[in-house]
Length: 126
Image 1 (spheres, rainbow, N blue to C red):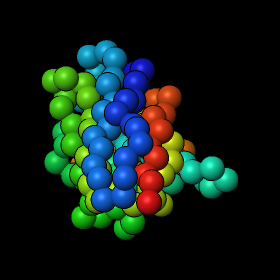
Image 2 (image 1 turned 135 degrees about the vertical axis):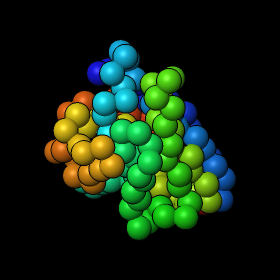
Image 3 (image 1 turned 90 degrees about the horizontal axis):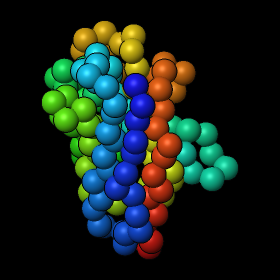
């Protein structure tokens, strides 16, 4: 599956952004999906994950209550709604697809994911 992330930009602290990740092909619903981010000089970190059918979602502690992951399998798209943004959320955000996750699972480790999008930059000013 090919993934195309979009929706990043520059926003003031406290603001919101919605990221989208469009997948190619007709097998999108077979993949658990995840959002990761990487700030300069830091390792890539898990942000949120969603199971194949969308019934289970998982979040990093740092974004719980502020970010919401969702998916539309008919549109082959996964979303990340980001509210109450903070300067520490500044990073390059990647979406990723995992072909081996169980139906209700989505993992937090980057090496579990088989396919990656190109990244979209999110910058939060203070």
